[in-house]
Image (cartoon, rainbow, N blue to C red; front, side, top):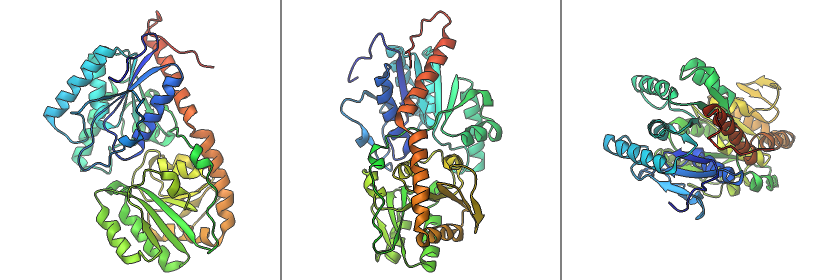
Length: 405
């Protein structure tokens, strides 16, 4: 271990499968840091990326307290999974944390089992998204749901990022009773995004941004069809794509077709703010989502978004529906589009011809993101949850708590 956990501070272990591409590593690393600022002694326990993963360990600072479990990864291996379970158990017995909070599927399974075997007083699991539908075949998905129902019995509280997720996991997939879920909105450091000015549009072009992993659930094929339909309708719209992954051949083919100034593919970009700075509006085409980090970052910069109504995205809209037309539901800060190219293209063409929409919806987006998804609020929400659970776990007060203003 890089440093000893403070003996008189409540000890928290955040367990994450790996630092692979996506929102969970960013969220968990930032939460770990800010819980330490609130008086908790918090450590991240994580595994290693597979060779096909995009590794986001560059997010770590040298001072971040991290424990590596080499055997824990996304891939299924009975031998490695059992070794990882043993390593997690040994870490928990040595550290004696007051709370273990797990994130993502593999860490959620191994971490919760290890925590109960090690006698950890409080066990929390966070669904950033889920793999209960859309990732695997029907039989495999059913098996995963059954496993999650068993794991829920080992869990004191299940955290989700948006109300839609709680409703879906409780009432559709029946993972656990609704009373076991808590909504803790995703919190991010939005300072760099708040400083961004709207892009200069001296040429009248609308720049549309898409950021994410090139995997099947993100529906890259829909994005490409959206480009095709948008280019057919309007010659003053261009796309900037930042991402990479196993479906990169789809984007390579798109670049060969439109890489004449209408489409730029940047690859995987560490500095997300530099990409958002170029964009007027962000799009997302996912089949399923938790709470998309890129859309929140874009809103922090005053950029509205157009997205499928996937998962927690519906909880990122502001106010009542303003209008509905051409397969699009317009809100004060965003557009929820039907998953077809015509709907997306209709919304983007509207933005291109009505720049006042970008300004007004961008202001609403920025205000919403900063108020609901600031990093400080996330850490305080978790700290209050821990204190509540500590009190329930020990009527005699043996589990320490931190006083919050």
